[in-house]
Length: 366
Image 1: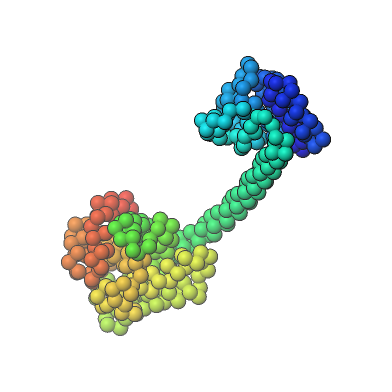
Image 2 (image 1 turned 90 degrees about the horizontal axis):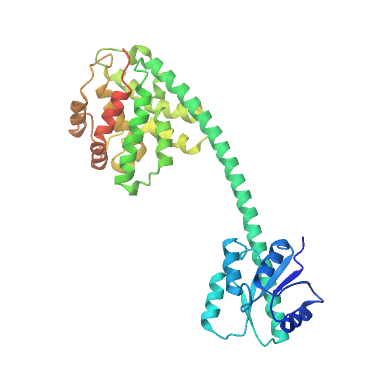
């Protein structure tokens, strides 16, 4: 419905007739001689009203009483209101604008000024409503697009989870390690990663990145599927050549991730490649395969490296018994299993109780 009507609240018949004559040729006119009658007309014709001219001084309900009533009904935001007054008072003017009127008309009327004020109010309000409608449509479209993207991301994440879970099961089967090993590494990585995120914002970690690192950590030992069982399961000490083959699981793992596994999430792919290759690097540069030193090692690889060592120490393997959690913690702090970043060790110490709780939640199965 077109907004082609002006509603006039005016108790003075002569003043009301002057306003009617000013706009009769352009608009339909509704007239009310008091506030209560005007409110009834407004509610019955709200969809067609382009502007309301509201006299301040009226019987039954004055202009401000009308505004107070309509404010409670949330109508003042839907139609422009212009107040008519013979008072040249700053208090009256301020009060009207606080209610949401868009302009004033001062008695006695100056016809050209009245016409222009009304035209400006109608034009401005129509433009405002068009902008609001445009923004609303854009927001709806953005919400639809975001919803679609979230659905696609959820689908891709589900595919990634299935793929990673399947591949990590192969690793565990070939390793003859605990079925809980991958779960512990994931949970330990999330726990330690959160501590690093809170203590050291300079690493730029976020909750989203931690989840990606957690999933990527599940593939840290994927390269072991390329190592012979006779070496993987050997109970005794490895020869130098055998140890070199074991070390190659880092480069083989990164090659498998790069060429054999289709990870749709780019971030998880990059974390998985990096972690698989660099989770045996050491902060002092004495790790492998690339001899990275300090923060040349990504924070993701550093996190997984530390929790992998902790899990190895606290787990029973074919070549050793499990250490007690306290002993394993002290061995890591003392550099028994290689050097770690002081920052990482502090973060590890902060969450030690949580790490030990996770260890008890995912025990090795006999």
